[in-house]
Image 1 (cartoon, helix red, strand yellow):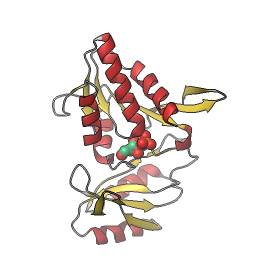
Image 2 (cartoon, protein in one colour):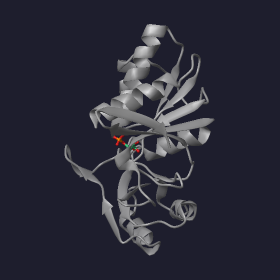
Image 3 (cartoon, helix red, strand yellow):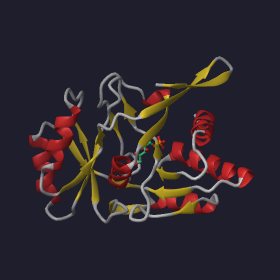
Length: 226
Ligand code: 5RP
């Protein structure tokens, strides 16, 4: 899988043009993209500004020699990101790394969105797994009840090894993971969830990006547009 992500990262980095402002998503696939872009910037002396979506991508950008700017200063021409699930309609579930809020803001401001995924992320219809939802801490149990009322069969508070209690997002909020099963109308559920007081953003992404899919093909790795 590591190798597929590396090839995806390289292909995506090759699509970036000199002078572009690039939104940097988050996650292990984007990590490979950032490393590859850093190598290109160095070897080809490119002028690229990256706008990170998380502390992870900020640190990676700095480590790989990518100049960093803010969304207040720049508008990204393209944002490159990964996904947890993408379906045949190109609807996605994102937020496995708890960076969904800034990822969605970046995508909404970008002229182009490129999503890089290995074939394990392809599903017929979202969602197979949990939908991450960023919520404020105040009254989060009541927000969980309201998410259940919208059809979630299970809602969990996200915890993670390395910290006791709930994880806190880069924006100071908590993350819930809601299981809905197959979502027939993702744009409606995305809006309904966001209309709940207490919900900051949810991991249903309806932006319909350009997609590169990486898979093992015999001995080698094949990357094709999705
Ligand atoms: C982070 C994300 C990631 O893009 C998503 O979780 C995919 O990550 P990975 O490339 O590590 O599988 O949405 O919030």
